[in-house]
Image (cartoon, rainbow, N blue to C red):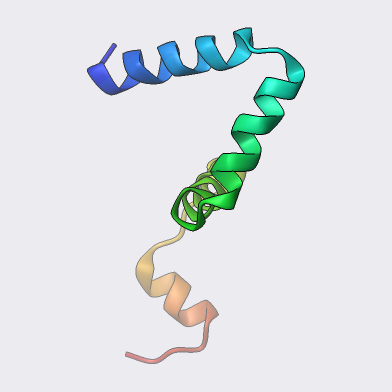
Length: 68
């Protein structure tokens, strides 16, 4: 486990130990911060698409009707 993964595990464990209202308060503060909110949205989008089939760059350009 990397240092980043260990830190994340500690954070998640601590977050889960909070009472529901405390978790909501943490999430509200994170979402109120523009930079953190954007990071969260990006992470959710990436996770949602993680299992989608991958396409080559050229195939993507073709699908978007972009000629190179």
